[in-house]
Length: 54
Image (cartoon, rainbow, N blue to C red; front, side):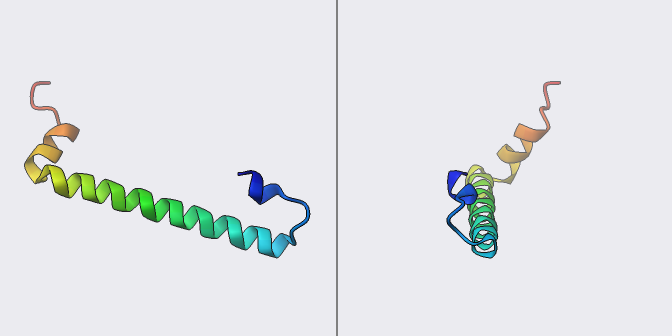
């Protein structure tokens, strides 16, 4: 991210901001995956990972 490499910021502030952004991004991705998994239902979601036709 370009904001992480800005030289006019202190290093501590930059690192703190980057780790916070990364943590938020990972949480959002996890929530999205869980919502997708729960929305499809256990059986259909499992069939996506394990294809019975193979």
